[in-house]
Every structure is written in structure tokens, then in C-alpha cells.
Length: 298
Image (cartoon, rainbow, N blue to C red; front, top):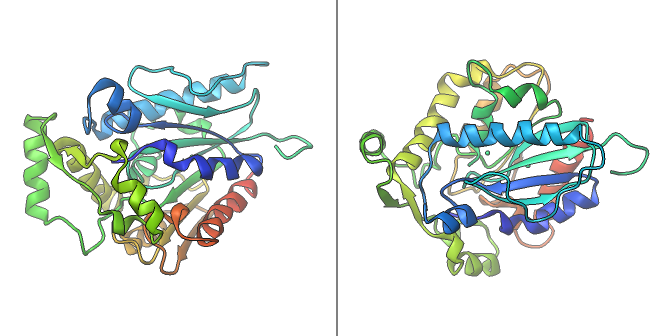
């Protein structure tokens, strides 16, 4: 439904603040799907496995003196990577900037000079039992932006249809379904809306399996999985009150229910789903809020 290249301006601003970003299109989306002709073919187990692969891989790369990566680079057959990395890092953060299937790993160096899995998947990564291998390596914190914990009430799919779709997906995991997000609902910038409407990598295609996992997975996070969140892992969640895609109130409730000792929920009044694409200085305010939180958690 979208792709990581749409975040280049975000990553550039992060880089100016000394935050190095490793990001990829998850399987079934963006360049990953385009290269393998697997649009929408994904699941939560597959997404979590990929996320764990990259978290552990990036942590291992941190321990390799002098190692540098080029952009773009390919390390895994299911993912297209975009890297902005240097050679040594010490603090890892897991970020998810919108729910539509990108994931980022942000890194900061402790030096004398200034030196981001769809939204619910990142939170799911931190709440598996037993814990995933890479979880212990994420010491900086978790950042969620407009996560899919629940659909916005105006577009929410009826419960019986979700369960039916999930049943169909279990039998026919590659069966596709139209799941497009209206361009007018992603942000308030008409230029971005127009680009999104004509972007071939933002194809409105998913699978019953992938969509069912996302929606039901979000419900599970809010009803039970939040109990598995570590009290010692800092948590930041940001959400626009005008989001017509994912529900602001569900994100706020999730943060309230977690037992994290260090947790912050920040809402942005009137902002739509893609807060990093809002008009003018509005997007800068959201980006800088995340940057300030990340850099304060070294």
C-alpha cells in the first residue's frame, strides 16, 4: 500500500540530528513486492521473523569495526533495503512511522560529536512469548506513529467480516483483496495526495491473510498482548486526532494500559494519518518531537 522511499525527507531530517536509519519495505509491499510479484502476500509471523532478522543483523554490524554499508543494499531475499549507516553504534530504537508496512531501526552513537515493523507490528515485536531474539538488543526504546491498533471508526470493518476474511485467508493466504486507503485521508497536503494516487508502488492490494492479521493482531495487542510489554523499555506513541485511517483513541488506550516506567503519548490536534506529510511546518513539528524524544533516551 506504500513504500519506504516516501520517507526519504523524514530520514534526511533524522540524519541532521545524528540519527542513522536502516529501513525496508516489508514483504508484500513496495519494491519488495514489485521485484517478486507478491503484492500483499504477508502475515504477522513472517513480518516478525523479518524484523527479528534485521534487528539482530544490525546489532551484529555495530560490533564490526570499520564496516560500512552502501545504499541500497540487499541482504535478505524478501526485502528491499535502504540504508543510511555508519560503522559503530550503541543504542538501538525500533520505530514504525505509519501502519502501512514499513519498518525502521534507528541508531545513535555516544560520541563527542552529534552523531524507525505496519504500526502494530512494531509493538507486537516487543510482546511475543517467548521473546524474540533481538528484543534484548533494543535498549533505546520503541516509537509508534499512527499505529494500527484499531481502525478509525469511519472506516472500520465489521467484526463478522474480519473473522470471515481471516478464515478465508487461512485457507487461501495468497487470495488478494482491494484495501486501498483514500488519498484524501492520508494527509491534508493536496500535492502529497496527488502523488500517492499515481504512485505505482502504492497499489491498493492486500491479501485476506495479511489484512486479517493486521486488524486482528491490533485487537490482540489492546486486549491482551500489552501485558507482555517490558516495564524497562521506553515507549513513545504519537497520533493525530484527525486520523481517518487508524484510531487515535486506541493508541492512547494502549499506552495507558502498558506498564512501561517511561512512556509518552502525544497527540497532534487535527493531524491526519501521515503526520510526516502534513502541510508546511506541521510535519516538522511531528518529526522534531520524535527526534527530541529519541535523542533524550541515549
